[in-house]
Length: 388
Image (cartoon, rainbow, N blue to C red; front, side, top):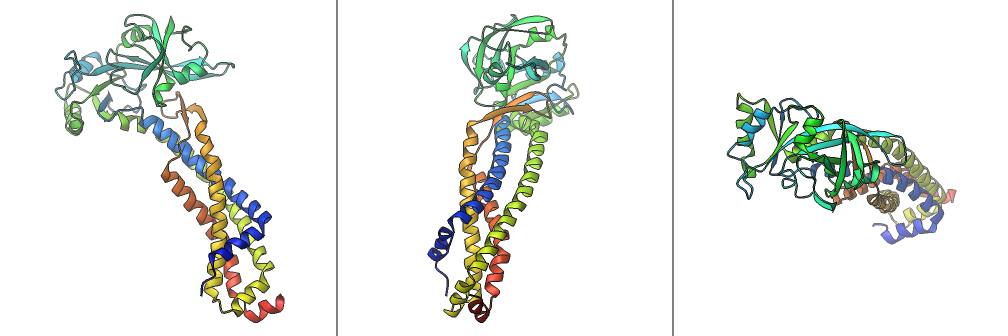
């Protein structure tokens, strides 16, 4: 004979204050756990959406980032003539020879500097990134000392607003437009004409070549041909994979730090849940004896008290998730350990995170409630009734 679920729920309601305090402790742990997962997901989403599936990034072999890479003009021309590349409306390959450098800019309202990516793009640079849209002003003119800034950069850095000027590469650069990159990594960059930026920074080689394949399924064949060509010292990566790799170090740091904090907090929460359930058992000795006298078996008592602890955990998990969901309205910036440039991203909640968080809360409830439930189930009928 099983104890009705309504009986278990009424027990939690009868001890409202204890239930609220214990569920609040569990909710705090769940909040930390969920926000760590959301932060990691936000970082991954930001960098993965930076790339297009059919786009290919060509960089110097063994280089991990565009800043470390160097692609000679001759090699860029050879790669750009490959038959697998898609053609634009003008019949030219959809290709952008790009230069990437880091500069230090001062944040608005403070004297704190931070690294920012300056990207020189070719004429097809915008066409290769359909998620990038000009929101204010106009596109920079090729051959001019003009730049456009990502929306995130314009908000956070002095001199990056439309109509303002920045000095780098021994020149004054005018911000003539702002763009929105759909919350991708490009929002944290400043773009200009590749040739002008190469002159300003006295570079003879590009950092990378971005190209669009006419058939995405031919990537592996294209990769093998590029990397086997003796004239080239390049490697090819899908753009999505390339930017995903850029998040690895920062993502690992966030995950490890977050999991350590979650484990520490969860131990405290499970101890709190255990104490609460032990107190519940101690206060309900007579009730347990009566249930046993009515014919309820030990396993039913065990299941009832364990279900009570897990119901408490689900309540705390739901509250923690509710408050964690509001973190999606917050965005912040930090240094990407891979590129050493500032990167802005936010929190992302998805069904997988909800499921993981609820499983985590149930696990805390199970661990915290098992020993008290076992104690309740082992009580002898006579001893329980006598103690009552």
